[in-house]
Image 1 (cartoon, rainbow, N blue to C red):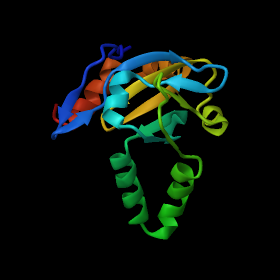
Image 2: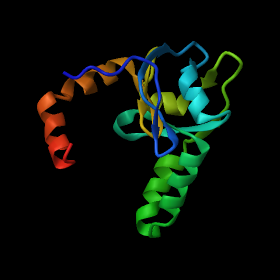
Image 3: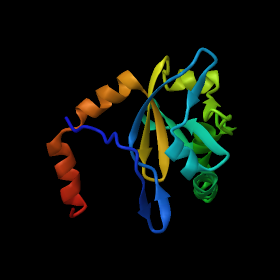
Image 4: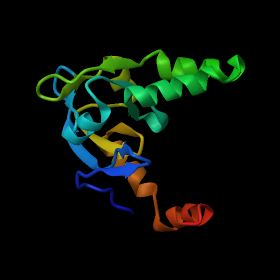
Length: 156
């Protein structure tokens, strides 16, 4: 098993902030979650939360949200309509409160199967929100051999 990074730090990728790290948080009874301070700095005052792959939530800055939207809108409608519905129908624009919390709507909490313990992870140009148990199970499936095979493909 590969262990995730837990130290809060930031790398620069082509002059842009790169979201990295792993942060454990809890959802309160009202469905609010604290966004890690470093992520808030990099994401801005307002950002977007939507359904992601593997039943996690994607957290995107306005500029990354715009890029996603532009790429999907440039696709032929036959391919774009499913992506439009998946990413945009349940998406929300959020603005952290003074304590750094955002409200995750029930539909997104249900999609990602979020109950109480969650993990924020940095994934380069976006953050992801995972149920802690599901993140640990996913992380357990990553082996050094599988990662090494992909690194070989990338010539790393």
